[in-house]
Image 1: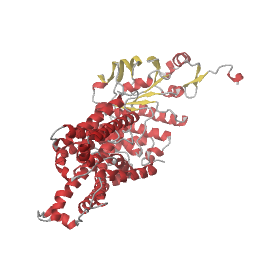
Image 2: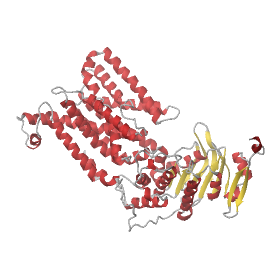
Image 3: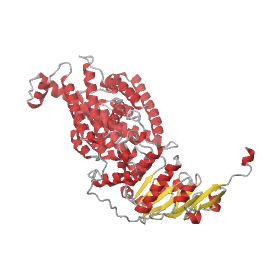
Image 4: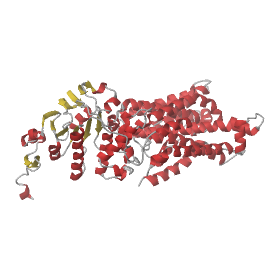
Length: 332
Length: 296
């Protein structure tokens, strides 16, 4: 098993090719099928009067971009989380960040008059950050400190609690519920392209941070003592990684709402392909996360056209069987 | 997204034919670093280590023994800066270890904790390569020196043939060799090991300690090892440190300190210490209670 030989140039180019294929499929399918030649024309010789070009550039491309960013963010956030907590079940939603972010957005849109879209990512980010800090602190206060078990338990408690708050809010305020309904199951809308411009710098910071810190995540995944022995300031490094995770998760929540399962499943698929070294897991997570969400979103738009299913539901509908298959193959 | 790819391509480009490049000469200059503890008090809620002054002997096998809960592992963890002392300090090259940059310290001192667990799916060579972490930076990812150090460490630990196997497939002894190779690849003057032989067969224990002794005596590394097995400790220690109730009871060569009185007072164990004339090694034999056989 000579993994390194194909992990580099070959593997990465293969993944990029896969990404391009997924992108082309995503752009071409929909209520109106647009062929690849027209897609290319819309890039090189854009014609405002051509309806196809308009659909591609104004509707489908923004949505594809959002799918790529969200998929990459969630997959990397999940991978980092699983490495740092040494818990294969960790993902942004299990540690309360998804519901926390959602709760913040719902409260904000209810109580703040003329809530502007520009602040949505910030609000989601603050909500996710606060949730992460709360869960981290509850776990740290347990007898054994921060362990995989204490993090999962406090995360589960917090998720249930904030989920209940969300539910209460829905019952009392039907109007907000109607407005937020699609957002809350997670959906990709081309209208969010403005949010994407706001999020892009953050996403870039988060992803670069993840790539730079990746080698130390491998060390941390071998335990805190090993990491200390290898010269990592464990406390400080965990905070830096937590900041990365929060940035990436918040950006994803801001763009697509609380999309579940990508952060859990994709890192496992990646590990299945590339092994346990985060120097490889992170770049592959970026690419595979993007490919996965692009494909899922294509399905969401294609299955019951001309209508579409919320992307968040398809990610779970597709993710769960994939996860079960992984469990079957990996756990013996 | 593709902008990130070229960076990733340069990472861990491990040479797969497992040979040290010919041009490489691996003459690591040995400079003896010193490790001392000054009036060290360490603990969690109550102190476990209660005021220890200790000078680790450079280039020797320093072996810590003592009964369960005497604080020997806690002391080692504090020397390795996993635990922060309540009072007192650990000095590495005459400077407080906690005030030195973590990565700088990791180039001088390595730690193998008790019962480490490898992440699932890591190959032997990938694990050993982790030992190069302190020598790398984001701009200097994988150099010829890194490759050579990993190959040399795998040769020394005798796991070269296992390079591409998954850690999970190995036996306990082989796995422990991999971890030792990882700390050897770190190329440090000082290596701390916390009970590296626990749960291993006697033969594997002896093999491991032979390897560690070679590191100390032929490669002038300083080893600090917490051990459980008394006879193994007596056989391999150049400097034997006996701990009792959070303090150092006595220390010295095995010939000086490994005797029935000390063992009785440190472990509360009645023993007879004899010398094997052939190897000149001390052996302790627990004294059975007289009535034992008859009562059965």
